[in-house]
Image 1: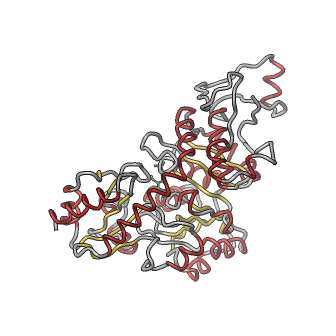
Image 2: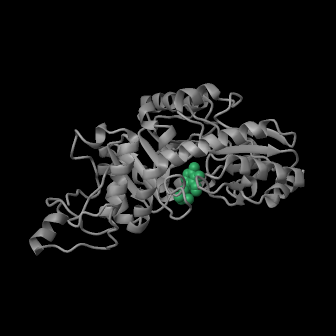
Image 3: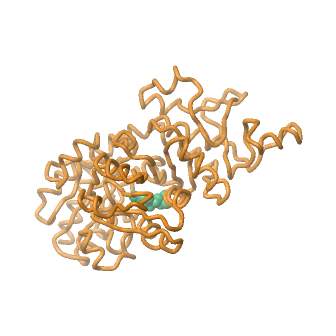
Length: 407
Ligand SMILES: Cc1ncc(COP(=O)(O)O)c(C=O)c1O
């Protein structure tokens, strides 16, 4: 078995790098052991034994390739990293225990006291915590802006800005940020561009191709796709990994468990099929809800009436599988609707084979002040639906029944 811990660039340039994405996702990164297993092995081990004390010394000096300790790297984790790296077309990938570990490691490994970060304010509540609360505690100034507004990015970026960070589409409002335009502005100021690509998935948007420097995933979502394991990943240049990320992961330990990495690795094999089917279901549901008398508004990147439809077409190759909509009324009506659903379950997760629905104002975005929610357009009648793999007709029937029963 050949392996290179921590970094995972393909050693066979005529192989995986030239395969189509579906092939990369089935075969890419496989490290087959001497037993010739078909399915990738789970190396559920904390450490590794050395042939001699000299070899141990050499490995710690990075003079001997191989594994030392699973906080630093592990063969199953390497397989997951390499497979995702091949899909994303990045130079390097490092996996983490959760999506939030990936966000925190990517930003905190790079930023120092005295730096400034600019972020789009429409983002997942925990990501906002990292930027708004955690960064300033360590002397990193943060400015939050309306990520849709290019002039706001220009105005916020300063000479000491080292990073810009945004989600696109954003949770739960499905607002987009123009990756190419913001990257050009950030790069002019010498800042790196960090994109949380969770909602788009690696199947529908490649931020690096639009100029971003670092791509972050919660692998908990579509990459697992069946609601089992937490995980995350950071993809970037080899230099970013070598200069910042690797040492941070090695010394602070947000490392993913080999078992979870194995589940995520196997999840990648079916990712294109699942995301395609989920997007098709989501499009049918969004169109249906857009004409429903109990629905005040539908937000869906796959519809022509999305406020940034032109940017969706330029930047994404698919709609995503989240449909956000506002029921007529407020919290009571939204809760009544959620409680009346039978197939779609109430859960704050997304990207699952099971359709899941949440009320952002009281769950994922509860910690924001009401004014901050109002600024983002997160109303009390807003519902976020993560569309799963069930039959679209059954899902529409469930939504219709619950709307009729509650509104
Ligand atoms: C956009 C986005 N980023 C990051 C995360 C964090 O991921 P995790 O739950 O795996 O830490 C989530 C969801 O939880 C999310 O929706």
